[in-house]
Length: 225
Ligand code: 6GU
Image (tube, rainbow, N blue to C red; front, side, top):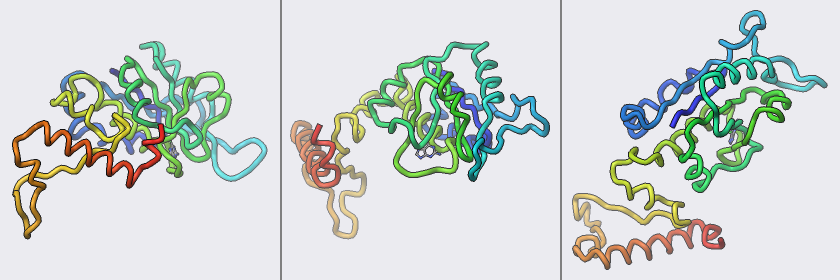
């Protein structure tokens, strides 16, 4: 999979894809991430990419022309399955959406900044608008990093233990059960005996019970649907 990201603050995306699981995905050639600086695609003086909103008001708006220039230069190289604008008024990212996007070949993420981007770009070029939750970030970059992480780890071959993405919280609408590792006892706090029993049927049953109990307690809304 290839993910291109258009940003006015590309430095914010210098490191998130260079560690741990996403680093390995890129090294294995399973994921390619490319950040494009919007300022490299403007024809305005002093690399200007934003301007005051028509009608007045606070904040700046990203202009349509640099966005279209950047988009069309990328589209000369490949066809995008989705052109996604990251915005707090988009559809909220969830596990089913990440699962579906992990099956695509080419994604383009557009990060807004300031007051957002000219509505005409959204109307005529964007295929999907995504938010990562009900709070406001200063720009779309951190949201883009979250999306790339949520999607990238689902690409087949990225996680070593193929079953481990399936046992995540949310993958089956249940939160993950508690986990323990050595030592068996620390300051008198013992690991639940069932996990030391070697009885895999009992362990699976216990984990499922714990998942259901945790979900009822913390996220009863997940059990409704
Ligand atoms: Cl995608 N962008 C911004 N600026 N804020 C957000 C967001 C996106 N998702 C949640 N808050």
